[in-house]
Amino acid sequence: QRITSLIALFPTGLCQTTMANSFPVVIASNQSAFSVTTTAATNSEIVLSANFTRPADTTAYAAGDLVANSTTAGSVVPLSFTSAVRGNADGIRIERCRLRKSTTSLTNATFRVHLFESSSTLSVGDNGVFNSSGVLAVNNAMAYVGSFAITVQNSGSDGAIGFGVPLVGNGMTLQPSATTIYALIEVTAAYTPGNAEVFTVQLEGFRP
Image (cartoon, rainbow, N blue to C red):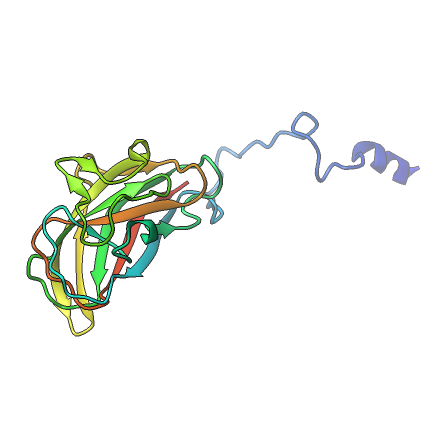
């Protein structure tokens, strides 16, 4: 009889039931503070990284030229940051950009990193005119989000690095059509590159 009474008092599934069938929890008025933890899937700071190797030449760039992996337009592969968001139509906020290069020269090493919500098809290759007074040599201007102006101003024995923030606003919110975001690099001065120089872009931000 006692077992029957207990069953009636604690019905099956009490440990995991619906909200409507759950008992309310009332915190005591003198309750000590307790911690609340979140899972890794919420509001995490991230650093996304991608790189490419430019062609094996040292042909000088002019301001507005594209820095890319190939001199052939159809073979240019934009920098891609895979799994930038957790799922389709999710968003991400990018607040700062790092630009690394494998050579140590700082002369005229000024660049602009452009971000896109989808991959671009370009009409020019490396050392071609990418930005002509605001007209970009891409097929997807509607997917363009903004850019970072970066001066590479620090070097060591292993290469050189610079940092930049968005040209407009304090950050960029991207909502890619899939889960990948893309970047292209523009030279903003008469920069002489290294033979097969490696460029690495790192994006710093927050992902909900």
